Amino acid sequence: MADINIVQAHQLAPEQARAAAQQVVDKLAEQFELSCRWDGDVLSFERSGVDGKLTLTPNQAQVQLTLGLFYGAFAAVVESKLKDKMQRVFAS
Image 1 (cartoon, helix red, strand yellow):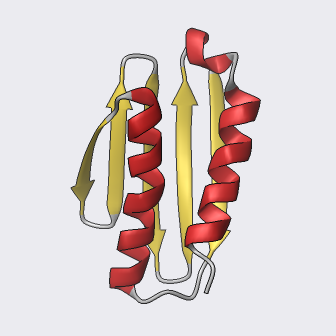
Image 2 (image 1 turned 30 degrees about the horizontal axis):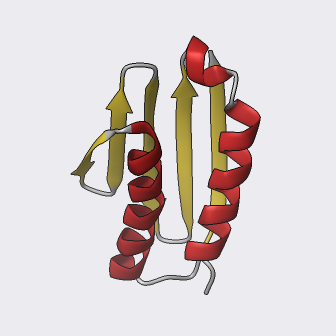
């Protein structure tokens, strides 16, 4: 298993931050066939072997992702791409 934790600062309005979060998770959902759901300011996503959430606060977005054994082998690549995507969509 591999755990990925990424924190990205932002200066977006709540609606913009929510749209940016959706973009990040939509990309993950496409790659891993995830089911996603919002609960307040937390966007949870999951499937067998992948479990995570993207939490929004007024000045930051945090992704916490756990990859099972099969996907854990790709953790470094997933983390790099996820970090890059978050930097791009949460940039002011």
